[in-house]
Length: 382
Image 1 (cartoon, one colour):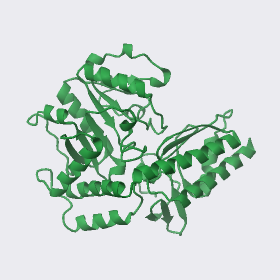
Image 2 (cartoon, helix red, strand yellow):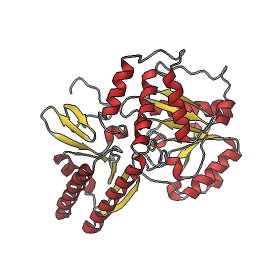
Image 3 (spheres, one colour):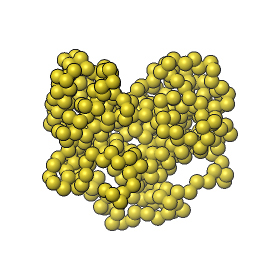
Image 4 (cartoon, one colour):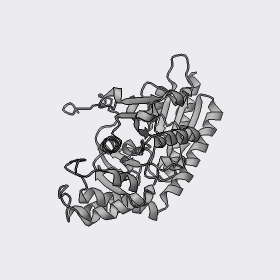
């Protein structure tokens, strides 16, 4: 891959992946790999889902792109679906190409409506860890892991609380419900908006349609990506009715080449239809519980796992630090040998997994068997 720019470095573990089927990837030599991260958490209903393939073919043969000055029947259908699953009745939805765009667009709306530049987010959020800032001075970071008091934060100046309900920069940590409700109330009481960044936690990933469903809150804006397109690049921003009515459409102008594309909106609608018709959120919950139960069994048996965290099919594994020896690194090497793909959070003792909601029981069993073997082999070294 000498001519390809890899922005995450040259840490390429698997080359020549040429085919995929649900949770299995195949390389040019015929080797199969179990994908427990659903292609960077995107293929919510499985790689090459037959229904999705047919949908793509159908819409691509009719019309893919028309430009943002036109409308297509797919747009209204997809918008209705998005507003239904977010619970933002009578609101408005827009479709873009990526989760990052969706979050950026949501932030632009909040600044336009409130006139406040200051934004609040968790210190371990994706936005914080990756330095996602127009201007760092515009951001306030809440260190909830160290139980910081809310009294120090200038809520009267905060235009929006950008809440990421569970990803925590890949580490899968869930802030307490009581804390989030208190923050939401303070932000709303001071005229600010609540933006839920559901790029990784949405579309059934946590055993609910969205991560904020676990907090019994109603956001003003929801940013959605990844699983919405099942691998196709489409995202969405959903606004509540009040928020949508607060936008001055003569002054708030936004252009993007693939905004509200017929193909993207058709794909998003089809993904939601599949999840609903196949009851995949409930099924994902069952499968997630099975994986967590087996991981806890392994944890108790070998004593080198510190903690298992998870909701639905968003799961993290923390290994016990061992005098400078990275247990996670060595376990990961064993998993790679067995062609198991997980996310090893860089420079940490944490694994993260987010398999497709359609993962089969036989694939779960393969993962558990391979993972226990890897753990047992490293346990012998210690």
